[in-house]
Length: 315
Length: 315
Image (cartoon, rainbow over all chains, first blue to last red; front, side, top):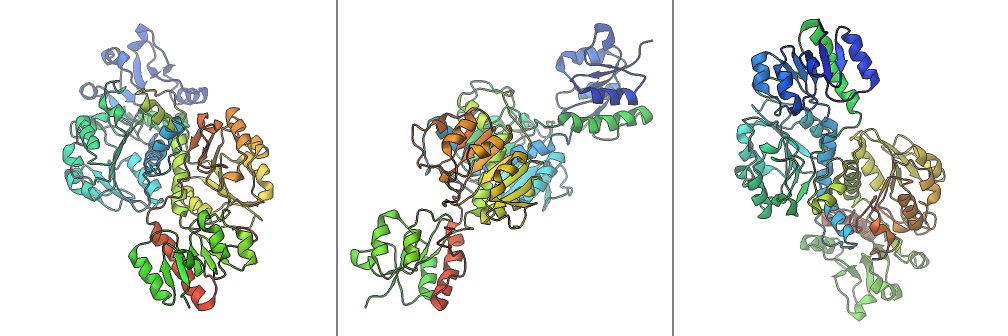
């Protein structure tokens, strides 16, 4: 009988392969699969669409460790039916995304995006400049998980007042106050900055829509680094065109890559980044801290120690 | 006999004019001068080149309160000969400049400048991206005054290790260690980021030159928000072209506005901002905190309470 396979859908350094093998001596470790081998995958690290059907057809698949925090692109229902465990990479990208958000806010407040555009034209234009102070602003983090908490910790120390929103309004570390998502439209009117860090689920679909943008200050900034479909793109486009809100920065989109003919490209008060906020230095170390502890616990107790996804909720 | 004049070379709100008048009932407050009135200016708030000769010809001039922190554009020698007191605006812009610096660093590390350029071309290019993590970097502040201290306070809380350089290496709040300016070329080799915040004096002229850039890491970032002539622009241009250092952000230049034919405009690893780092929200309040306390002390004791400039040192 063939050994069960741990399938790594991404390259890792030898030191990590050795650690995995030491923990799981009865498993084969593979980074590519022959047709026969697909049937023996017990653990998949990462999940690529191309192999979706093949891996789901295997009766051996027991556990998927995703690399990303968001798992909306995985076949959650089928995992649920088949009792496949799922854990995510939540936390790995928290520091990167937090630095990305602070960068987008300061580059807007200090006029840096405008400066880049003028530099391209070799124009010295000092009096164009929109400038503002980050310190003293009220910031709302919508989604108080790992990333939201890291952001709160960092940006509070720059003098920002940080509020949070999550499903129930349960308290979370580092927020002055937390509210239930039901109160989103009520809360945003007091905020200078709104940061979307929500997973893509049925409940969060198009949650940032004109009902929200209508209530925001005309000087307000909206940043989304969660899932693209949490934003009603057309209604955000309208809000930006009408300057109902002052500025937005989007790292994620309903359709990626963003199509050439999207009206978003032409908005002067929008910063588009191509889903890069999570790019992380020292990724392998950070990821393996999650995977190795889960691997040990899975082999010993058939349980995951950290980052298990509730397949019904989707996060 | 005419009353002595407090000449405001910039507009201030009525509330501040009233406070000045209440403190100094024997003075006239003017925001524009007739020819005759120039001779009666005792206190000048701000200093414009056009009025340089006229004001210096007045025998009544006793005190100049500059709005900027840097005073290299003022006739320091003539003030010294004539016993004119000088105070500067140091501290007013500290928070703005600190936010500007953090913005330039994060926009570089998170690839935002590149993203702006691709957005202009409607191009979704995710794999171009240079990205790096700010947390954990070693940063050297050259000039540990108000701005340097504010920067240190803010950026330490983002996980950056902050070292300082000043004239003598005297200790300053918030720096892991401080060194004398003599050691600049020795220290920079250990640094990921070097921030210039020096006043323009004979001692600081072209202090950032190839001797310094040669010692820096090829991954290093240089930011200048001090005076333009502290940088040897040609040698920095060469260092950037050869990628001896990875990136620079300049807010100040040897010649301002930066001439159209400057080779700096075309450097892809340079961010040019048009001397905007000091733009400050709530400027009048911040400035008047300095001026009013000095006015009181000047009238009572013929002394300045804060921010007096040593006319020999130039800061």
